[in-house]
Image 1 (spheres, rainbow, N blue to C red):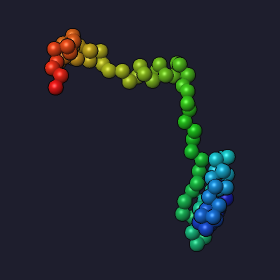
Image 2: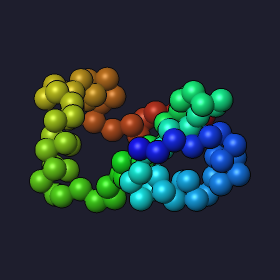
Image 3: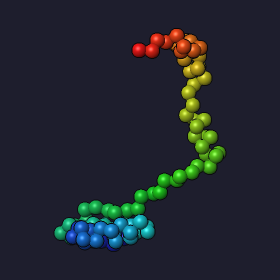
Image 4: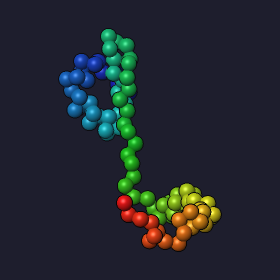
Length: 84
């Protein structure tokens, strides 16, 4: 981990961010005191494996009585609901 003065951060932001993007963690200092860390952010995956997606969806489904509750409240159709 390297230390960089806030002045260098101001003047060389892009190059420091490129270093962080490549995996380096940088401590930012003010008057020689560490005040902040620049660390890489974990990348979000764009795709999930099918098995992981299915297990995630199944873990967050509504309870089995929810469909019955909706039918009681709204009936089988909403055709008779007036449009206003």
